[in-house]
Image (cartoon, rainbow, N blue to C red; front, side, top):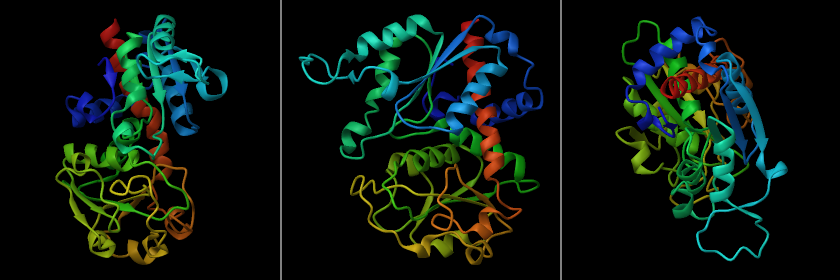
Length: 317
């Protein structure tokens, strides 16, 4: 594995989950792979779980880990070709990526979208530029459109908790939020679930449908209660509009996940990637219940990063 941008880089997602669970049971079994190897985790945006879980995964594999908050510690980067750099951007990505690639064996990138220019955001300019110029494997730690480490952790969590249910009904539900958020978690979750052996339902208000290439074969409904009926897993997440790009079209509190809605499910488990706005996205009575898997998901963020880095190190030898 020389890059991990999306589910397309996991040749067999279910096999990857199986191997990840084996690694979780014996987390230091492959720490020799990272001996004398290094990874740089580059953050254009804030992080808690992504930073700490990926750093922890690298350490479990014996790697040297450097965290670089480029927005605070580095120069502003120019990504356009042929530009006259007489403005506020002091360094070109061609130079910066090549230097960082010369220093490290693997690079992780976290960069959010502008939510102003859909066409530009959906080209994934930042992460693709690093991949083009760095010359080393690149891990997507959340990009403009996708968050594959989170989605892999989510699939691991579902497999751990589905019990005897052969093909669980998994619902991705939009929920309100006071700020405009990316579609990346929703896109990525839908993409991974479309490749997994689950029944995927997406529910959101009108105007909030995800991009068709990510929604895929999911059943999409604007009736949240219909979606919740008989569900085994409820994944709540806010995203701003893809159709009217980056806009907040609704903050309707009727979409908040509460106990009344969870009662429609098949004793459903509640999931969220965190951080979460309590009593906006989800009621305390749900997120603090015994059916809440939010901490399990967070723990599996380490497992997801662990298996991805292991695969990359195995290729490097």
